[in-house]
Length: 532
Figure 1 (cartoon, rainbow, N blue to C red):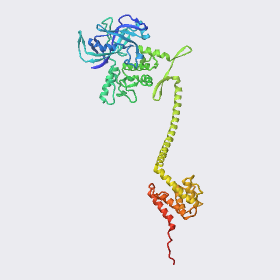
Figure 2: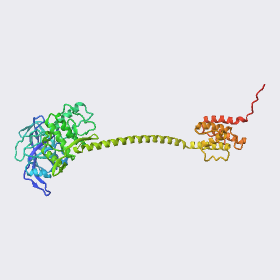
Figure 3: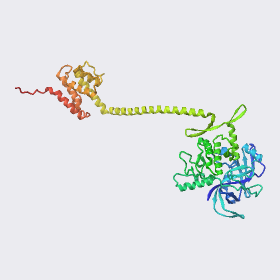
């Protein structure tokens, strides 16, 4: 069983009537029951039964109600994305009339109304989806090869006498079995379940090839010997309807820039398609999409591809193209377009503007390069500042811990206590930094000491030595002892009063102990030395 679209032709039933809105209401037989003959893609004829039980099924008739009417059959199915550019009317009052499905066509387009009134359009063709049951038999004495099931209508198209859509280069034969209905010997040109034939990267090659063959049958486009894609190309659309060639997955039609570029690219490479019908279908799909997106494609009857376009599509293109003309001294001049690539997208622009656009793009690219370089420099500075901030934050976190703050306070008190007993009360230590205090102590011990360039470690050594050796400010032994002990207590991990301070590292305490011993050494009696 397969899912297909069929196209069947009927005629208007009676004289059209005007509606209060000025539209044209045309009663018509839309389709019928019975055995209809279709031509397949290989040219063979297939007889299909449209059984009354299927044709007059409630769901099928309901799908015909309010179906859009089009000017000829479009290259793609009518859908919300393209109905605005394709619809010229609607179907109403659908009903059964003997062996026919009858209804009223309400034609809303002035262009189509004119065609109907002039008899340029006098036949209709219904395009519909159906399931195909491969069961042969006879119906009312007529042999059939298979049966149409689950009929769902997509649109009804209008056209001239002896007309029907069977591809751009496939003729149709009409059997005049009744004056008010002529069945179409048509062709299955597209299947409605489009996405069911879309490839997926998780499919094996055999499955992908089978899907491509089914798409070729559906769309009437040949499989190319080279350049054919089995899966959707990277960074390209993933819907079959977004390709002018949905069989080989070539000439994407979205975004709009690719659609505009597809026509010029296809014209340059159309010869790779050996089948005339393939070229016609692809080109028609491109032009139809250009019209949908508001582009104004030019039509040249001397162009082999443009000559293959349906008349209705040509007329629409020519109407939109008129807006792209310019008048100079009363004469109309067509704009000469040229393809240009901007940021990996292709556009058609007036040839006279091509040079200016290229110059502007060059200036833009140069400016972007300069700005990128500046941005890189700023980014480097930013990263350096972030690193510096992290380092400062680490130091700040360590310095602001309660135990660290207390240790710093105790160390300052010990320093001030020790230094003041050497420098005296006349030196105000409150406004001095630790380094300045130590320099003052060393300088008092050694007036020639120069602190410029001295490292903190060097200064610390000189300070400890000066503090131990320097006389107290009042020259009293007790004051000198107190200063030395205050320094030693600090280094031993004790508070200035001598109580234990657990926060001071033991290694520092050992070093301080040595300094304390040095400070106390003067109290020890001198050893007697023997003389001879």
